Length: 476
Image (cartoon, rainbow, N blue to C red):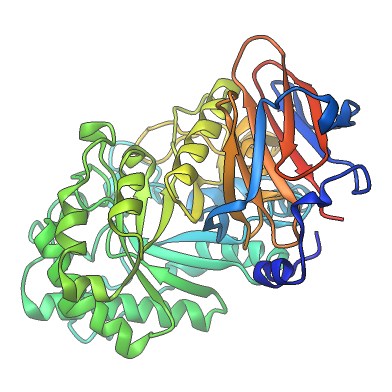
């Protein structure tokens, strides 16, 4: 689609009545189990004056948040999996994720140091924590003289740079799972908390700045960092627990001022917030403690939420309307990569965007077909690679993302959808086209009628059972 500024399009006289018989015909893609990304002809188009009230109505004059884009997370094990594919298949997989003909991902997340999907170098599943790492391994190195990203140059950076061959303007943000273990009170990557000493807090803030500079020197576009992955969760893999007051102090007195001085072009987001204990229902006291601290708040651009804090994002949108919001890590599931899970992912994406999210991220974009990390937890991924053969498999979740991100590009705005069909969300793109992403969660096909407000046509279409659909009403 041809891109132009939305406000310019409106000022130039973009009329809601353009969606008419004179306009290009709407486009329809559907996916269901075994039949993915199928393009169909929308044959049942009739004058609005001759049609009953539509099941779904999209109003481009009622806009909400702007969508910054979609993306996924880089981890070492994703690149290990891709390296077993042939060079041609590896390139095709990256083009499918980041290319304009595929998902068109424009955003990505990077771990700062070890994550729970880093490589277990010794291959011993009984001691996965032996290979956790940071980028400053020398104890008491308060000047960070030994800071190094050499390990990242082996797998993580090649993965990122391969993606950037398809998407050169890829915008990345990052978070640590754990500080260097010598900076922690338990001297261990799993669990524990940061040593609450001024010299440690100052050094750790500089650690972020060092990482930003090192990655920018590698040609990677870094737009943001967050202080910690899941700061309220003690985990058996790299993790670090903060109280809300600790986060407010670290952001307001150390990390915020350091980035403002040394990396002022890089945003600081709060998070990443998870809430498994309350199934996402509790408006986490860490959010309130930090955002109500004026000094910490002044440095923050937005708030990041994991999938298990799905109910908090709408509350944050209401209480802190000046902050941008991201869904930072989608649901991991259990490695089955079933179509039922792809359908559930649709509902989760819709829920977060309805709640105000500007950005949405997959967790691992690629894994081998075991779905296993060092911690023996099987997880889903949009793309799997068979360890034995190198065959690349595009799972159902890949197509769920594609149904959103292929046409809902950066700059699109969520718009109002009304009607008695619940599984629908719609967007206005900068060229004036309207994009509706519709699911039929029923076990039977169902007919729905669709209309863009102000248009003189109604589209009536039967959507397959257990399907995800994208309908595009092109601008003339």
